[in-house]
Length: 471
Image (cartoon, rainbow, N blue to C red):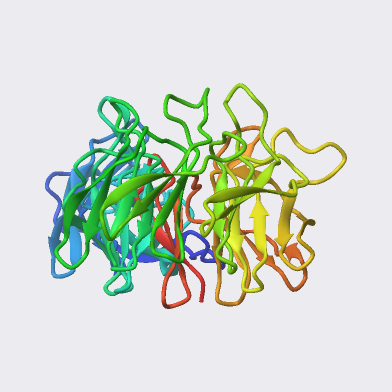
């Protein structure tokens, strides 16, 4: 007998599952069942283990691992009563123990001397689109860094992982390769780091600065050399920093601004500059306003636009902005944004404008959530379109089409994790309808690859699968 596969594939993936009852009876009223599961080809997510459990009206037996032979998983079950309804619950796992697919056959009478063939779709426990799967990290993480290397590879460093003792920063580093879509472990950093910054230097090395080690906030920095796959010390800042920004200047030096040295109840106005040629740090002029969870964007003019943030967790968000001028090492006041924001994103557009999204809480009175943009021609902020929801700690990526892709984030005010991808179209100055990610993500990274696709990594405490967005 055959059971139809749903018309809409959605999270379903068809798997042929054959049930055959041995013609011979082990004893009167009993029979045996040979279970054959032919899983789909999954690349790069491979099935490592398949189990099956027999359920009868009175009880469910313990799951039994199936054996892998000739590209299929098989197992024999018996003796089973031929006079009662029986079903089989099948689950497929990857090497880390993550449940990939599961389903159960419909209740069937076991009859001696007959062979049953059932087309059984196996259902993913989470929304599944095969084209979006692109490899798995060694462990789920968020608040890590992702750096696009010149070799079209992405370096994933640090972050917070869930271990036996709870959430903790990690020193783990992995390298993503688009071909063949996999993550490869790299040598770890000298210190665990969460909420650090990572900047690609002109020589192709990666500078990782500050963050939380789990034992305290860090003032140290490290450099990764992709030619040798090694880490080396990069000096120390004058003070530890968390929730800061790092911006590479036209000179190749790196500007570090704001953050906190003690915790979210206090913030810094101080700024520092790293010189990759001498591997040294020097003080820069301080901002007019202390801030953390702000943004810093390098403009075509060479100036840096710092926007929003908060002065402390006990105070409200900031709408104030200021420019840093590298040539004169001074800060100049800039017009305020329409809305105070922290944990937002700022994206440089091809026109030289800066699009700011999210980070607004509480909701603005009498106006919808949305973005705004800095227009360098009129030197003013222009209120942008309404958004379907307000998020913080999301990611925003400029696409080759000129759209800005806003993904995931913590939803305000309920602090749930968003599972949406909202493309913003500058031409129409509005968000297009939301698309759905495989998993909710916040504190993740979204990196534009040479292919034009966006690599989304981490941001989910339970799931380490990464995904691709785009053509």
